[in-house]
Image (tube, rainbow, N blue to C red; front, side, top):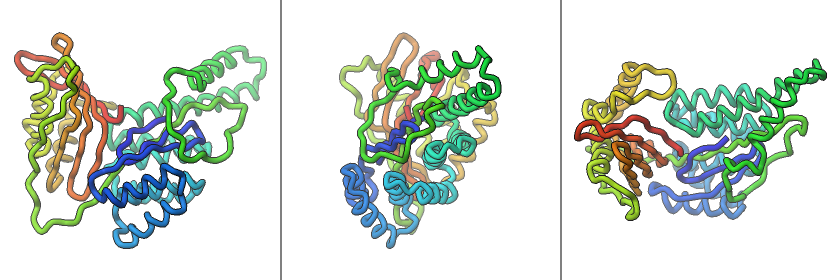
Length: 344
């Protein structure tokens, strides 16, 4: 199971926690210090700095998230679970704490709880591809348990061993789908040898709170994108992506929804009408929204385009950085979104 990242990326191989850190602009100095200590394995010092910061700003989501990672890296699973659980209560719109909870539960072989946490992450953000992949890994683990139970009850059942072998092959260390990672800290003891171990990776999201303003600020202008020089690009496709972000920032729901093609299929099992209503409520319900796009890379192939970029989303005190991919289709003289995903 894997997860997207901003401040920290954590990749878990069932019971292995690893992290590589980057810094968000809000509370940059404090986050950079704690992230660096975490990256170098100085967990006691990292926790001291995190606690000192939280003493003055106990509700800061970014540092609370870092604290949860430190607790997990220190082998304090129960405390980490409590930290991430409280984050889901205080910031239910964030899918990443649910994902990290799922990884922690998976490490304790509590796969039903892991499944429930991932379903909440997907409900919060249906386009969160990492949670979907993680949920598949949890289902594979549950399947392996069921197959092993079947063998215990009927050892002569010749249909079960090939299924177990397939799961082991899918999640073997040599599988090319396995992602490399930078080890910061190892987690607890190995899982039972009788069952195969699917890859489970967790990411940490960076969220940062800002002091409340006396008045509600207007949405800041969207910065021009930094486009990869070697990409096959179309200025109109780039402009379509930027117009989509600008409409979102301005809470112009009509223009925002108009950026989506009739071919767009909402993620999950939502109907197009239900998805549009949900998006409308989420956008209009915010006092202010800022969506900035960095490192925009648009590749065009005929009447189709693929846009990849780093999305900096801010709504009130919430600030999240994530990777985003948009699939676009040229319809007439317009580029419209047919598919979108986060964390990939």
